[in-house]
Length: 312
Image (cartoon, rainbow, N blue to C red; front, side, top):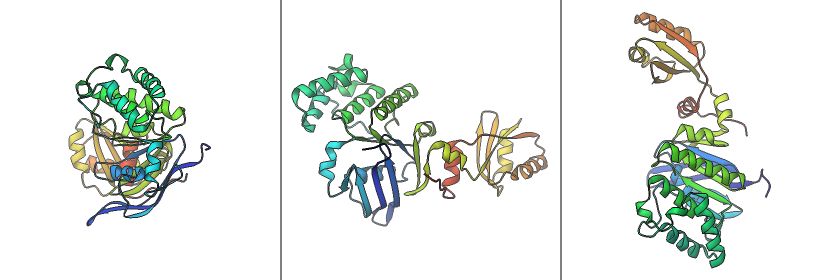
């Protein structure tokens, strides 16, 4: 399999729960060894999509091919070739670290000698060797996360799907976790990671932004920021809260956010800058307005209003 070959192909993928459409006509392609990120708020369809790609949830419509397997037809055969890590710790809290991995090795059908070697390797790699006899339920959030990752890659899967894996851990553990993900990608594992953290999304080699079950942007973080149709401004003034109130509801303002003592404003067009200055002066606010670099938050705000297309 070469680096440009698709590991995941989904066409017209939809999932309905009664009258609710959780995933709506989603087209998705993920290539080998990519770190593909799903960015979106809770309830946008990330988890539902991942569960359909794993074969755990039947789609209402559409076609899925993962690692050459047709889903849901070949879901059983696919299980041994993928790893899946959920947001909630899903291992056994009343088993030790080593016992959890030994149990998973048995479920995966690993031979005893190979399993023993692989478990030792993973305990060392994910800094759990000194915790092997500790009950999993007594581990910290970051340690549980590393144990769950070890369990997900125990059988050396070709594809790893992770559903908001860092939502319950501290920033240091998140950084260490992402270092581990890039190590896996460097070794040839393809990763699909859902997140609602902008800093994590920036780490991905490619990014899909979901909104209400639809894929509204797809490209590298740099491509998405370069293609931003909105225009970000930074406003510095002595009363940023008053400035925010003055611009609330202004037709060309797409988003407002206070960053420390400054106000970050996303406007529809670059020439809106002069009209914003006039609005602030009209409310007796002195301000310095500067152009600023686009970030993924700007992209997210914009594309969830107007779909953004980026060429692959």
